[in-house]
Length: 103
Image 1: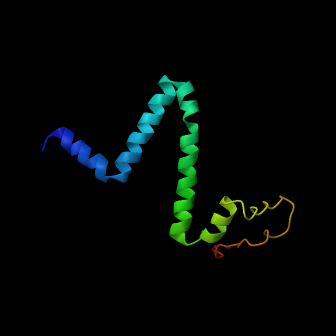
Image 2 (image 1 turned 90 degrees about the horizontal axis):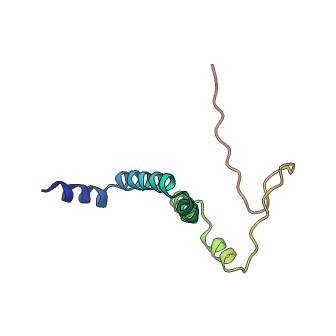
Image 3 (image 1 turned 90 degrees about the vertical axis):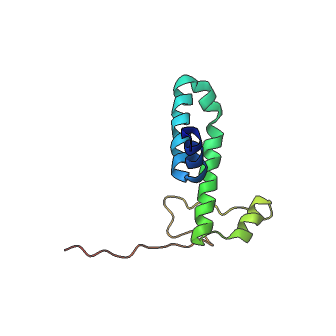
């Protein structure tokens, strides 16, 4: 198997390799063409949004019917809790970490 085919197979099958290559490309573009990198920032933001939705679906924490209603404009999103408010906003769930005993 030639070296090019081996690299192509690794890039095709390894998520780690894909992310590492994307990171290298992003750094090179940011250094050589900073204006272009600024124009491409919404792609990074979109990637973060996709990751949040994917992980929340994976963990079972996404209320998909409610998300569809909000995205369709049929239900306004819940207002974020103000820093001085006591307790969560309606409809949200607070998950507390278990207490850790220190010796």
